Structures are given as C-alpha cells and as structure tokens.
Image (cartoon, rainbow, N blue to C red; front, side, top):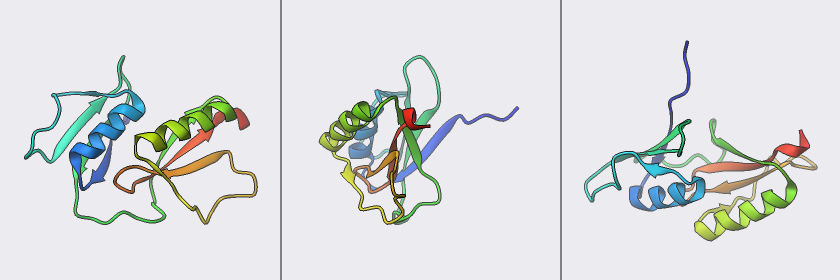
Length: 124
C-alpha cells in the first residue's frame, strides 16, 4: 500500500526556509540543522506523520503552482491568528487571482515564494 512519506519543497535559501517551516509547523530537524554546504534537509513532525523536506532548487517559483500545501485550522478566528503568526515568521499574503466569492482559505507564500493555503476547515 502506497502512502506519502515526505512532501518536498524546492527552495533557494535552505537555512531561511528551514527556520520558517520548522517554526511554522513545529517540525524538528531529522539529522540536525543543515550545514553551510548542505542542499537538503528533512523536518519531522513530533509524534510522527508526514515530513517536510527542503531541497535547494534553481527552478523559479510558480505564481499559480500545480501542487501546494493546505494547512488546516478549526475556525475563522484560528485562521486569522495563524495567518498573523505565519506572516510574523516571514510569510507574505498573496494577491490570489482565483479566490472564490467567499473563500475558506487564505493564500500565503513562504520565505521562498512557495504558495500554501491556511484553510478554515469548519466551513466544510
């Protein structure tokens, strides 16, 4: 049976991206923080689950990516608080051209420009 083991994100600044995603999701460095010449790091969630790996990439960020992360919260209040916290960690709000009339998600970009959404799961 197949299962997702790791989600890999391409980044340009490995150390900056590792600090952001570690703080954003409470992830731990699998093999310690990356060294100055490292081009890859794996971040694990405490207690198990899907890991996030960061890989140095020269490929430019897609403005409207084909694949992205959805981070779930349980209420509109929690969504607003998490968006503020993530922006405080270095994420940026994205002027998303594809928002529906009443979106249940907020599109952000990480420190590398990778798009991800914070979704209010209470809205179905």
